[in-house]
Length: 138
Image (cartoon, rainbow, N blue to C red; front, top):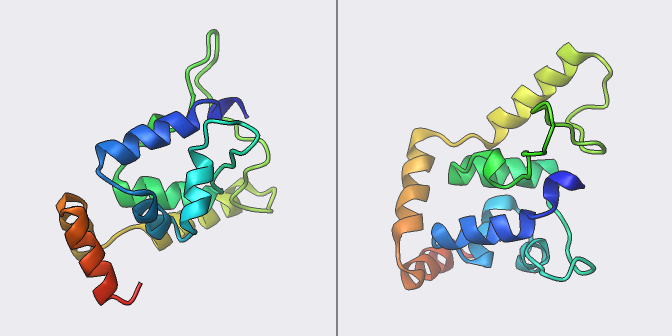
C-alpha cells in the first residue's frame, strides 16, 4: 500500500485544517467515528484505510484533491496511479468500468445547495455544528 503510507497524517492535516472533527468526517463518509480514528492511527497495527467509496465521499464533499491524501510521488515513477485491490468495477471492459465510476462520482457529488450548506457548516463553531446535528436527529 505504497500510496497510503502517509495517509493517516495527511488525513489528520486536512481534517484539522478544515476544522472537522472525527465525527464530522464519519458523517461525510457514512462510517462510524471509531473507523475514522483508525484511519488516523499512528500505530500501523491499529490502522485501517477507507474504501474507495469513503475516500471519494471525503474528497468530493470536502473539495480535497485525491493527491493531497495519497503518496503519488515516487522517484523514477511514471506518474501513473495504480491501486491494486481497489476497483470500481468487476468488469474487464474499460468502457463499462468507466461508466460505473462515473455513476459513483455522480452519486456522491453535491448539488449547489448541498455545497453551500456544507460550506456554512464547515465554517460554523463546534457548538453550532452539534446543535445542527441534534436538530437533524443524529
